Length: 219
Image (cartoon, rainbow, N blue to C red):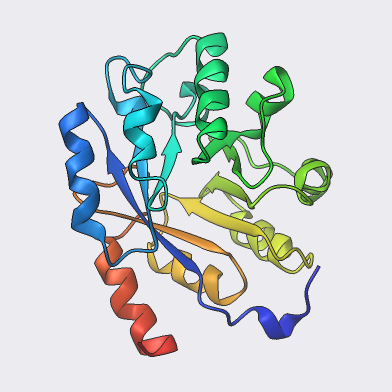
C-alpha cells in the first residue's frame, strides 16, 4: 500500500506489437524508446510455435502475452499447452501477462508477472475486483484491470486507484485514449500504446504517450 504522494511517479510505457510471424520479432527494436514492448503472440495462427529460447534473446525488453479469446484474444489456444509454455517462459526469466482466471485454473507461476482481468460484456463491482486483487497483489508485478466503457466505468476505475495499491493498472476500452493518460496521473502503473496498429480499443500510438509524458514529467 502507498500514500497519495507516490501517484505522480512516471508510469511504465508499453508499446504493443502484434506478432503474426517470427520475423515480426525484429520490430521490437522499433520501439527502443518505450519502457517495454508487449509481444502479442495470439495474433499468430499457432501462438506457441515460437520457441521460448528465441524470445529469451529479448528478455529485458518484452512482455509476452497470449491473450485468451474470452478476454479479448484472437486465437483459441490449447489451455494445457499454454500453461506449459508459460512455465517455460518463467524458467527463462521472461515477463509475461496472463489472465487471473488462467492462473486460478492452471496454477502457473505468477510471481513478478502481470496478471490481467478483462471485463468485456459487463461491469463488475469494486468489491468483486478487490476480492481478486487481494489474493495476488503481494506477489504480482502488476495487476491490470480492463473494462469496456459501460455506464459507471470511470467511477469504478477511479475507485480502484483510490484503494491504495501501488501495483495496479486500470484501462478503459473503447473510450477516449486521453482517459488512459488521466488514469496514470491517478496512479495507474502501466499504459499501453501501439507501434503499428492498436491491439485494444482506446490505445494511442506509444510515441504520443511519450510526447505527453515529456510535457508532464520532463525528459
